[in-house]
Image 1 (cartoon, rainbow, N blue to C red):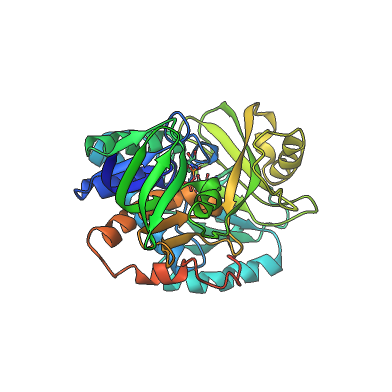
Image 2: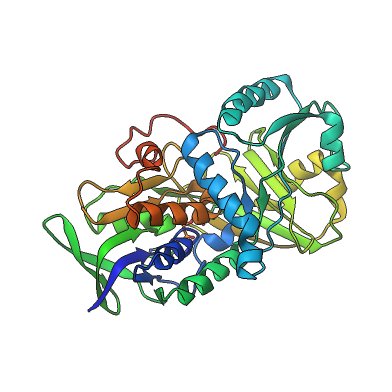
Length: 382
Ligand SMILES: Cc1cc2nc3c(=O)[nH]c(=O)nc-3n(C[C@H](O)[C@H](O)[C@H](O)COP(=O)(O)OP(=O)(O)OC[C@H]3O[C@@H](n4cnc5c(N)ncnc54)[C@H](O)[C@@H]3O)c2cc1C
């Protein structure tokens, strides 16, 4: 039986960076992944947005760390991850939304976020050709940005392996042997492992992993589709997020990546619960109508492909992070909703400080994101 200090279930947006930061601090780390390679779960469905401009202290802190790591990543590791610090723009066309976002600015500024209200003229400069009719301005956070989910997870895999983390692909966790409230053996379809600490980073399957140890983890995925165009010369930089709703969809967002392709996705209304990742014929007409209304300049771009993935959702839209009371050596890093890619690097670093350095400076995150909260509120910018 193989023995590790830490065994991570899932080599996705969360598991791979966590493996790197833990191994870098000297722990022996094993990662079990049922798919053939890293990032092939929901990580590859993400369109690449990374922002610290959330509405709550825990996610703000985690993503501020991620952005700090992204700013120095390519220089430090000499690996291209397509990081662009192009900012996030929430354009505003009505008074109600203007008031709502301006109110949120007060909270966001309290957490030292670099975000401000900009007037319509500045919005037009940032996104030349954006629909000017009734445009009132928007909020803009210049330090947010985007990167390639596949490149980033591939980069973290390389770094983790250099730190001697071991990855077991095509291998599925099937059960635990538990004694005295502690997992003493992890069984897969191929082997058996033991570890001092087990991290559940199983994304859309977090609930099933919980059930193997009789834990009820409220992560229920819903389905989201995305698409990508042909590449063209860069003509706008920020991630544009339209948080208005219509009868069939809630927010949608899009940006131009480093290759020049416009990448976009939309939140369907009502939510489509479940794990079906077959893409549909409904998505393109829905998203294209709304995007072209906001940004008619995109009308001649050809769409190359679409795909469908899952948001591993929790009832309140916030992740679940921390130790469980029922199983003493189980740490949860699940329920990342629509933001697991941007949370991954920062959270990986934080997890390594909690586990290895026994740091208590992130207790406020563990308190806020505990499994044992009420799940009563709802994240404003989920
Ligand atoms: C269309 C779309 C757009 C998105 N855009 C963004 C974005 O712009 N920015 C952003 O931050 N997020 C975005 N997301 C959300 C993001 O993709 C997810 O939040 C994130 O990938 C979740 O990370 P994870 O590590 O929890 O899960 P995953 O990346 O899915 O990793 C979990 C891994 O666990 C493995 N696993 C599960 N069960 C087992 C088992 N029993 N044994 C072994 N392995 C197992 C799975 O195979 C999987 O590889 C988007 C999602 C979608 C669908």
